Image (cartoon, rainbow, N blue to C red; front, side, top):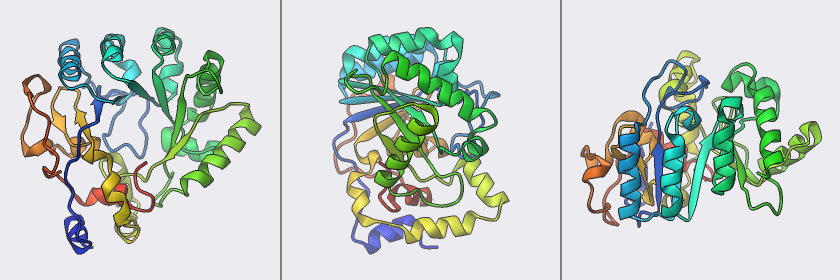
Amino acid sequence: MMPFAATLEKHGLSLVRGEARALQINTGLLCDRRCRHCHLEAGPDRREVMSRETMAAVIAFAERFPFRAVDITGGAPELVPDLPFLIEGLVPRTARLMLRSNLTALAAPAREEILSLCVSRRVVLIASFPSTNPAQADAQRGAGFTEGGITAIRNLNAAGYGVEGSGLELHLVSNPVGAFLPAPQAQAEGKFRSDLLRKWGIAFNELYTFANVPLGRFRSWLAESGNFDRYMRTLQDGFNPCTVEGLMCRTQLSVSWDGHLYDCDFNLAVGRHQGERKSHVSEIRDLPSPGSPIAAGDYCYACTAGSGFT
């Protein structure tokens, strides 16, 4: 297999930063699910969550460097006790605040307050929903996911999310349930829209399709099932040089639950700090300069295969 760096060189490309326009905040690895594809190996037994002190440092970071978009992810951010504090602190500091959800964590009665806060602050919701086939979805995300996810989307639609004209955005994310690339996004979105409306009467705004990144629990599954080499060849054969210019790591920074800076959530997963130096957001006074290098590995093939990481 050709290393990712060699593939870039072969095409006369380099992976360097552009202007930092987005900030992704990983609030921790605690999750109510143990998904087979999770590159962070999040789950119910993980205890790493962002403290209020770190949240305050992240909010101050967003104050010093206003990002056009801020993206809160996990784990399941809804399980982090001080999530409302983080949301309230970020709303006035960005034009677009997004919260990623696995749906089941948001649907629990204990999280009604978070949903109300998202509605009142016009937070954009990005929700994972791998397949409209219940058996496939449950195989990836665990038994009972589909039932819980459908209930959650019904509740979100009732609150206005995903409903035309409401201004409350609900976008779904689908990633393959096996060792293959996702279907073309427009084709997959049409099928999801039709299936979800016909089967369950629910709606959403847009669908994003992602290839699974060969890290963490998904990498372990690939190795155990004998699919690792074939999947990596699939990713490499699908390399699309046109995706490199628009890779999210070029214009985004990622902060871990303990406040350290990375180029992206995948470099966070493997512990490769931004600029190859461990820096806490409270210490940073300048953003990485356009043209500075981005740490890369063979897992980057997942972001550059086919249509790339949308």
